[in-house]
Length: 164
Image 1 (tube, rainbow, N blue to C red):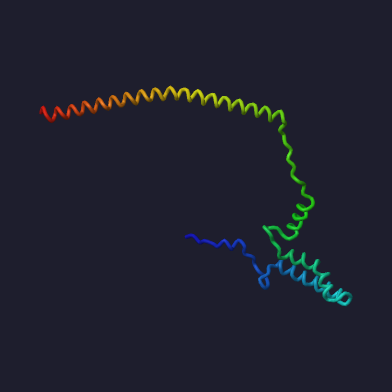
Image 2 (image 1 turned 45 degrees about the vertical axis):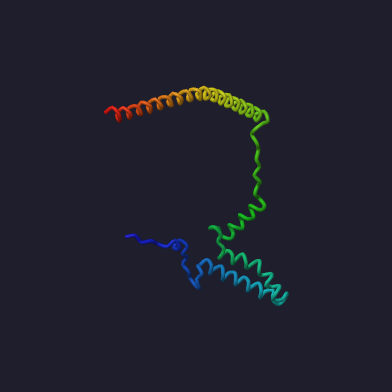
């Protein structure tokens, strides 16, 4: 008896409250607490709008830490890779190991091989030219033999009809 399980079971995450995992719940509370604290701290001095703008750079990374997942990377791993590839990644440089003399030698070798191949083809064509003559002779012989056999068969048919 085989019991097939759905592929979705690999992605199953146990939820604690409101469909959130423990990590998501913890960082949600931490982000809301941080945002609330910063807004209440600066509300009287700079107003509600500017205090929300000040709180945003602190709240967003905390929320993304709990929720963001891209190809198995957490937010901080992904951010680290993006920074590394943006600023610290060295370019790949190709250095040729071939010299001009080496390329000339290779070219000469290839041209010599090409000439040998052409000469080989010429020899084969000459052989085939002789073969064509031989094939023509064989075809004429076969035609004559076939005509002779047909003549013998015709003569046998006439003999059978009249002399039997």
